[in-house]
Image 1 (cartoon, rainbow, N blue to C red):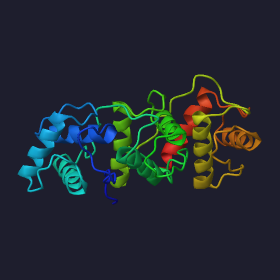
Image 2: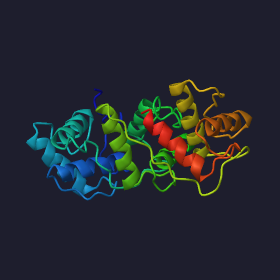
Image 3: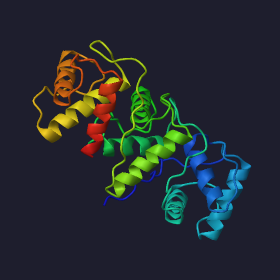
Length: 259
């Protein structure tokens, strides 16, 4: 059983004037541990006081600054106190332009489960929430039935945490992918196509089916069409190479059976 992934120290101290998701996470965890701080992602005087009090009570240098020791103490204490939700929603949306440890936590975590959920793209673990991280969030949202906007609000953050927790316990989450609303066919592109390519490819591998293995690139080309045709023929669906609601639902169901 793998251990749960926790956000690592961001490499720079958090202090008065600091802003962002990492600050919001610290504020959330302080509050959860009984050291009240406004959760707004802005490191002001109230946050400094809460940090100072926490440090004093935990035998740390009470300087009101979150360096490596204070970060590690807070992150690990919170995870031990709340093992069912070891990394709580930070309280502010993580979106394009965000930087830091929480971004890296997402990047590292989703890279860790993409061997199973192969629709997820490989990400650089650089702590920068750019276009690739946005795409990865969109795919995650698509796979697990959430509103697809590429931003990590509370629902997306919590579902991501659930997937990580399930993986750590060797009990994988089933996908419940949101149908895109219109059929996918040759020429289509995007996060929904990545799901189709992933599911049809993984089902092929699991059962040794005789159709081409599509590349998971989000582009519905001729190979993806051939794979869909092969899948449809195997499972008694209308054979047209088009992913409508019936094929979409069957792809997800067959993928879930091999998890």
